[in-house]
Image 1 (spheres, rainbow, N blue to C red):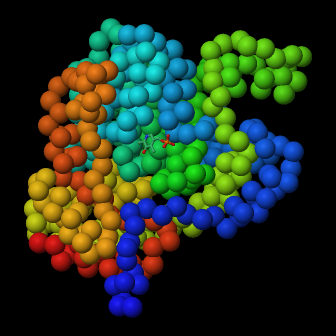
Image 2: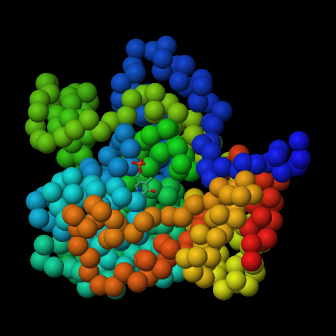
Image 3: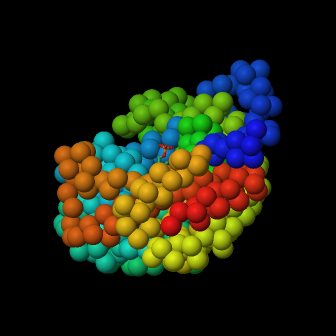
Length: 381
Ligand SMILES: *Cc1c(COP(=O)(O)O)cnc(C)c1O
């Protein structure tokens, strides 16, 4: 085999295998507690509390489920508006629609991909019930500006922190700043359990409601703690809690978190150092987090135009490297047009999404594979 055949294909993302996962899973299967909220749920939750610094965290079946809970917890219902960036994952808007609300799309800042606080302020009406921000790549949104708008208009903030677990930013730890925040543990995320998520309840007045909502609308959590002598249906809820099987995998992943992040940062830093001259020479640029911090969740290049971006992805593919774009802007998606509305120009969103190319980034990549990606990217002119 040639050297290239041994290295390729280099997939875009390969889920991390946590060393302790098989043992943890075997323990759950051998136990009589396979449903949710058992020992591994408790253990993983404690680890998340330590990593993020916020006290009230509930594991969920997905990041999407956590977003649905966040929207419902803030009381969003029929006709209520929630301001979201158009450049985000579909669940950021779909969760609002699930509650009967209307996603109001606004533009991003041109170089971070994060929601532009100035555009948020312009989109506020008397129907606005929340502002939902997403820290792209775990690089912080300008939360000082967002929280100032939140206080001025008395509108709560949801942080979609699917990419930025445990990122310490100048604004505070990501996921601990807004009233409610979410994490995703999908297997494309830095830490995963196949499918899973968490909701972080930073506003203490929402904690009890969150427990009830996650437990099918019952006060079962209080019952299990001995605070009530029977449990019953008390509010709208659903089944948002993951089984112990998922929690067991998550717990093993969280044990490996430091090592995962160390390797992801090594690769990210190499891409950044070795590709920035190449990107500039073509009139583009490499990912440059505006406030310094990020989660090494994604590494992207902003190409000078759409054709050059598609050309780069095609070139990589023909050499066995899978890169990818990110987010068809939601304001122009079929469901975005049907359910949402836009305020202001979407020029930066359209430009960013049409020029962005992400490179493979996962902890199991070998140094040779990283070098091969860099060499292949640089061969594109
Ligand atoms: C992955 C992701 C989600 C959804 O998470 P799931 O666990 O897949 O439901 C939400 N928002 C963003 C920004 C994501 O990247």
